[in-house]
Figure 1 (cartoon, rainbow over the protein chains, first blue to last red):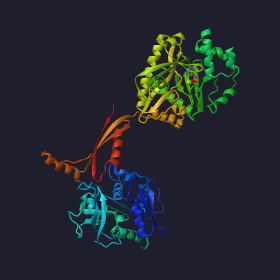
Figure 2 (cartoon, each protein chain N blue to C red):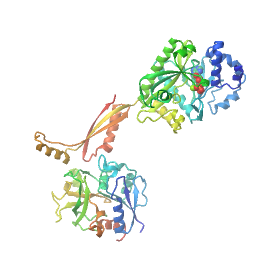
Figure 3 (cartoon, chains in turn orange, yellow):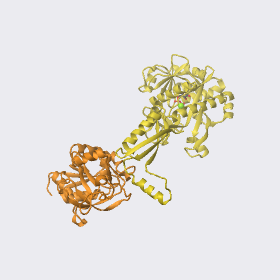
Figure 4 (cartoon, rainbow over the protein chains, first blue to last red):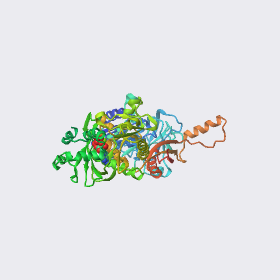
Length: 234
Length: 380
Ligand SMILES: Nc1ncnc2c1ncn2[C@@H]1O[C@H](COP(=O)(O)OP(=O)(O)O)[C@@H](O)[C@H]1O
Ligand SMILES: [Mg+2]
């Protein structure tokens, strides 16, 4: 199989190598680091916007990365149905670039949160979650200061109606409620997908728990799902 | 004798020297000297001679070359009172020690000088300028040039920096006017009013006029340029007599002025050639572009970005909570926003507001969660 993934490197990205490693380890496919100055990504079927602090996240997280040369190409590929995954800072960039609705605000507790959280997989109807079960509880690390997802009520309704909330923060027992969100996200939202279901953004880091040696495997099915969507086998 | 020598190749510099030599003895005026010398030289010029030297000049120039200087050629015209100035691409510096060509300089300097002369005309400064007649040519009144280079300086640079040991860029409290004796052979030395009197170049009254006129020109040009984000560092003028009046002559261009970008101090003049800074044509072109664009001014924009009322502001809440422990009870709500302080140039408040709004929409505020407001005011 010739499918390839691109992991975009912004000045300040710091999860780019983890993404390459996990993607390659899980899928057996090749992932390349691509500098944000690139204006064309013709040979890539899957694009990851990794975590980190693009451009120091001055002004707002992801606000300046949105004007990176590569972003217009990412938009173009998104329009053409390629799979785009934004993790953490990558999620923030996708919202700033209006590829996903809403915004990620300062954590309600004002603290930078770096710990494992439980998530409930809200839908397996996506190329990123087909290898999870609906309602499955998984554990992934978060590492952010601005992860409080915010969206106006009307659009929030649309998200729910269209089955586009992909992950919600949950308790270890799997309940989603007022207190399950570590950062104040509306309706405990941790990850969402676009209407065409090819662009996913999430705050937790699946690439950090995709190999047994790292203490967990709950990130693995995400990459397996993508592999399946690309027509390959794990 | 000297005059015979000029009949061979008469460059303006040579002509100048001869004039300077002959004038005291023959007590000739400049234009008289021209007439005196012309019969000797006329016969030697056939049209072929100067067509060649013009190199791609416009065909209207069937006039006789009167003399050729380092940057321009001066042609006689049908009219006794008028001359045609052709701006060359040739560039010299350090009194001719450094020679070269600056692509398109002739056209640009002709265009730039025309803009300046027209501007000065409307501001009440009389000059030799009649009209621009072609890409490289302008028609001017024939002057009896006063061999003085009148230099006005607003910021230390070049020879002033050397002479006084002042760093380039030091802003002068008041403009300084200097006179140089226009004489290539002597290297255009700096002279004072006593020298000028001794050389009988100008009467004290004329000299006072030159100084006042130079300062007036400085004020007009400086204001016009600053409105186009250019600092007028210093410049050289030449004046001459025409029918009993003293008129501004020669050229006003990046060859004869120092122009710096008002924001970056980037040099936009012949210093780029003198100092091998590159992008010489580009700098001259930039000056022309600035001159012909709308005046701009500096504005200060203050953009306030705040979270929408519907969005929780944890930072504001935290501050509010801490207030009660300080014994401050009357505060009902606190919301924290950003104040973005911007310096921006533009033509007018409306245009600047438009730009700031676009910036706010595109970048400064995220419409999903934030709202903004801003003010724009001119900076003095
Ligand atoms: N209106 C005018 N009438 C007569 N001479 C002029 C007039 N304007 C400028 N000049 C002279 O013509 C010369 C123009 O050519 P330029 O290349 O600048 O000569 P130079 O090498 O002597 O500086 C100048 O020296 C200037 O004194
Ligand atoms: Mg000259």
